[in-house]
Length: 385
Image (cartoon, rainbow, N blue to C red; front, side):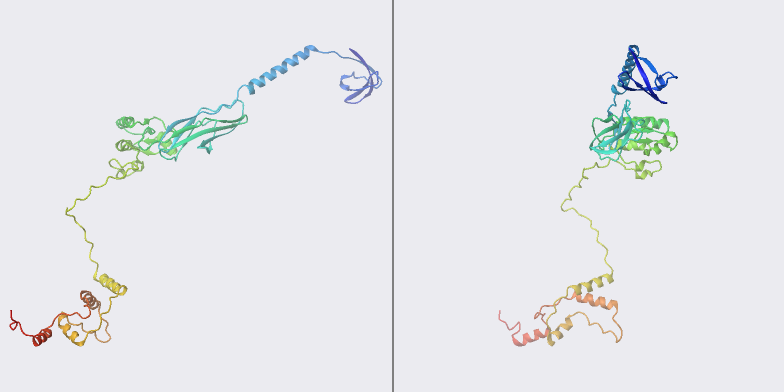
């Protein structure tokens, strides 16, 4: 279609064109011939380019298909959590490499019993972790949460239980420097208790067994804080039928610290001794006799705390009659200005404790009483039988 337009005004970037019915059309001046000025008439042909239109439509469709195949078909995959090894107080968890597709990684977190236990460092590189400090014979559940730019993906919950003290299947031993014969016997002992032995130090290695602290494997075990023990530790576990402590089995530990013989399992009371038979002789240990000074001090304290009742006064005749029967002479009075000695006070206290006060009105018969009786009544011969 051919259209004739009149040029009204030409600027540096835009030209004003007038139609025959006096309508204004803004037209890029770049598309006009270079010698066009105001008042010129230009003919413009307008036609549909179907070839170019089809080409553009095909290119747009290909772009949409590429975007769909790249971002619409694949999506991040939820991680799959597994347990590699379990012991009495720890778990070693592992998972497959995370599949992010085209999404961006935000974080990978581990949850224990519904609470966040921590975030996994370098989740695109690490595929395992170790959880320690758990309770013995206790069930736990774990799951992973993967957060990406495409959404959040959660793994299935993993329910696992720590071992009992008598379950030795979780022990994983890595041998170090030792004689060949000792290493062979160690392998046999590990097999007998149901444990495992691997040649390299890994995250699931529970004990490093050697007789000399040297070598690259030993250095890696020390770096990973793995207990380094002697082969006797495996024999101790086999002897007691349970996992034993490692304190007495370190390389530089004293062998006297190691337990001898099977120990009493937890929760089981010690065996009771048989009851003592009646009438059997027994030996008792008498405590040593306290010193005389302690006895005197304790006697004075007892006399002050528990004073005895004061007997009633006696008549002069009773005092005269009791003087010969007292069995001891009165203590001489100390010289003036001289205090009584400790021995005198002790003998006085002993005498006071040895003499029991007589009740009022009671006394033993005396010679004078016999004389009075003979005067008042008849003798033995005068009495008729």
